[in-house]
Picture 1 (cartoon, one colour):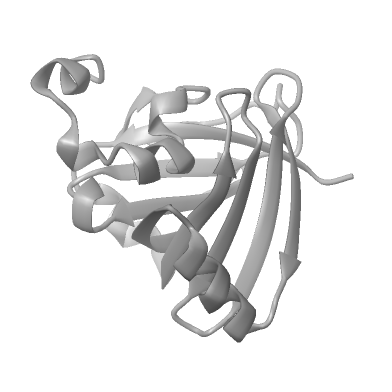
Picture 2: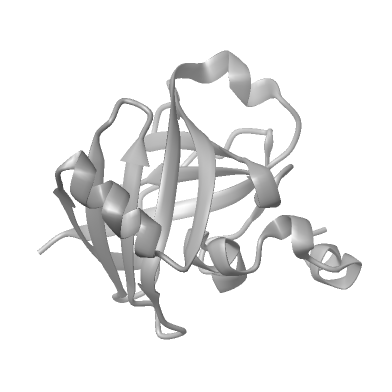
Length: 164
């Protein structure tokens, strides 16, 4: 059974760019997303790779995650069926302590920039870089599925205030 353990942070400024080792544009759509945390996502990278992913809540910061490569044509057809979509550029970082990425959101979610780190275990010690702002782990309104439905660019001033 796949398990994803990650922590997420708002990103302040551009100091993280010095740690970027690769980047990949991603388009993703949500075929199903529930308030209980179950999602079915299709993702296509600029390198013409495609995946379908099923996620469901587990305990604490862990989530069940099952991800499978699928043919690009199938992914394009599924993406066309997805009622909610988003795009972003993902940067892989050279930081210790886990697999770090920074997502720079595009279109309706600009100028949102989030950092994620995948961990081996939930209680793993972590040195959080100074350019990471508020921790948003578990904040449902900032999940990719939620941002596809209600993009950050459409948030009210009151909704954005909560992030400060």
